[in-house]
Length: 358
Image (cartoon, rainbow, N blue to C red; front, side):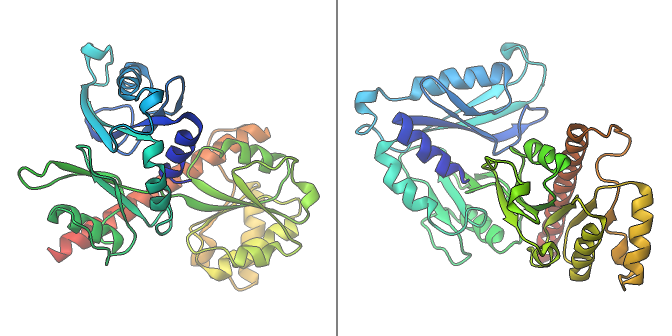
């Protein structure tokens, strides 16, 4: 879900909400740039790191909330920013500093936000606005998008949408007298993840992955194998032809194979390795199962370079434990590590390409 969709939901239910976003993080800080929380009069959603910083942010945000009587007729696109030194003054020992952007959203802005949320795909759309208030946020989903933006902002938007720069939230310093702008994706980057098998380990893994940055397709041979009710954060696929589903997965997806049948596991792995475009292929099982699968896959024509992509056993090495919950935590941690490494490689590649053009 896009962050604007979350704001719209909160405004619909509560009339007004403040979004507190980390727009700068120097040194050791609880959260990274782009981390955000929504603050209502009597509740919060998400976190910017907890502790004294978050408590201060909540107090400040609630001080910005309008009275219910003026929530739909007061000042619109109201923003504020504050710098926090994460040292003794806050009772924290991080030692870094962070800047938070506070944005007040009310029912007056809801129609505009709803229109903004419909522009392009969430992951491919960028949202930008100055730190000072009064100007609505704007969206860009194509390098050809034109806006009345400072030149420095236009360049960053173009480079991100041309994939010449990583699409990470960033604070942009523009010309003298033009203040600063904040740019972020409409939705955080998520990795397509396919889980084959709805047994004990599959169910435990799906539970652990609920709040992690993956879009989950959960597949098995029959609908009766899935829990009822189905977790809201997954898309279930019941099909007798799991290898065909695997072969049709998007390029760069992660795959975890853990069905009730070794023969079916092998067929899925074969389909994925023949496609040669999955970013990760994990297979539940032992080192012995890995050896047998590698031998059989080689006999079926899979080249040695592709066979090296098969990860079996799955999960973090050395963690131990064969309980479904332990395996699930281990696999989830491994997937998060892989996703972080992929983001870092992408960012390094884009930075290198950008440096080469200078």
